Length: 446
Ligand SMILES: [Cu+2]
Image 1 (tube, protein in one colour):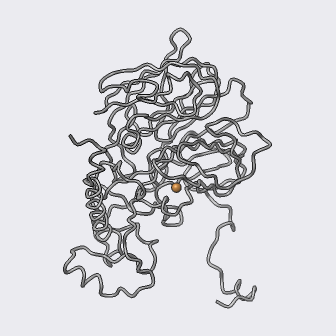
Image 2 (cartoon, rainbow, N blue to C red; image 1 turned 180 degrees about the vertical axis):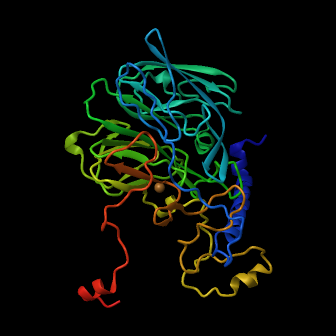
């Protein structure tokens, strides 16, 4: 009998990976080269970023906390039964759109990846039913939550795996406030790679009265062979789609705030293999919490980038005192691109004139990888079910970012919950081309 391990050992998986790689390189040559001179009509072009209807946090009467907003995902409802908050998670296959043009067959919870945010208050008794509608067994580990050993969700070690079609019950008291996560602890390699991740926020009982904009973003990384719908759980290093809450820019919702708000962004990472140095423009912030608890005030330091390791939470806070549209993104350059391939020859600076035509005779559709850089590769013909490597439309042209990139929009006043659109810059505060007079005045010869 061939199971996953013997298949790996036999090298079948390796040859499948080689095949996938060959297809990827072929697709890359077909789709990621210089654009052909006349614009073809079948271009799929990234959707504009805004205005969007933004996800709302789920305010719960009588609970007294400011609900956390988990863009694109939302919050898991509960019912109170004899003083216990009762939740129901269903592990199931999910059809998910990463960005317009890229639909995947993922696994998740309650119809979404990541699963819905579980939100409660320090000291709450909670009961979570988990129904398994996957084609294989699963379990749920409550990552970072302090609980009885038998509720820890490690299949085989602390409980039986939840069989297909069955519902298990977890029940414990949320002893500690903080930001935590949930994920399977059975066949993690497959189930996490297919999108089974989620976040938990336990609000402190005692809260200060400050107005806060509270967001949760789960970082994830996927290997989605070009044209395929099923992410490849065998990927170990060559991830080609990077997401916040399973959305890649330009499909990521902006995070909005008004001047003077305290902004809290809870960054989680359960992506299979990589840490992400998350960088915020326009501000310095402090890391106030990890999934281990509060960082003592005396240990906090100002940062503009914080690494969020796999299996960790970093909560950042800052006061929104600078208006604008500020980028928030992973600083690994390949993590702000979509479906890039890495095996193409480097032709930057090379003279490739005529090459496309000659190679095109034997490889129809062949295009040479950008010889003058790759910033223009956003409006190319794309294979089916794939998204452009880079780009969304911005107020000044192309925003040549993809993947793990979003925008923090700070405004003096917000009206309602919608995306406020693009920032209107005060006169004289945008970088523009220098005039000849200015160059002469400052003695520059260019
Ligand atoms: Cu990254």
